[in-house]
Image (cartoon, rainbow, N blue to C red; front, top):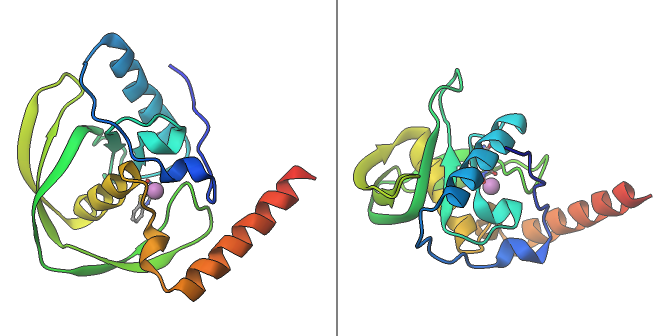
Length: 168
Ligand code: GNR
Ligand code: NI
């Protein structure tokens, strides 16, 4: 099991579209373990494979208070969306930026677990928001893409400046 580095915006690799997972070999279970370890270490509620430069369609999540709700979603799909809800979003790949984003309030999803078993379920609350945020990562989308061009420009400048400071 190992901690993995998280890609930071504006890294272009965050824009890659992930490919479906077609084999549930031991290496996949290892990747899922690395993702949980990295998500917990970084205190995130979710982590998409894209964020650790693995361009395969899976993400992990834990929206519980006591970090006891580990869930893996492989080849996730949204079958239906309902309602709209605003919430403050953040992203481990865009540190220190928090913005209000509107998402569907309830979704019906289909995915496979880490062993390859397909399931369907209805999701609402924080997990529904997280699911949409993570699925966006797998398609190369970031939550800031929903903001005005002006706000996006400001965030890009701020992140580029922070990256320059890191290098000196
Ligand atoms: O840790 C995270 N918190 C969060 C808060 C509101 C909406 C989405 C998220 S996901 C984020 C972790 C992350 O970047 N996942 O891709
Ligand atoms: Ni994110």
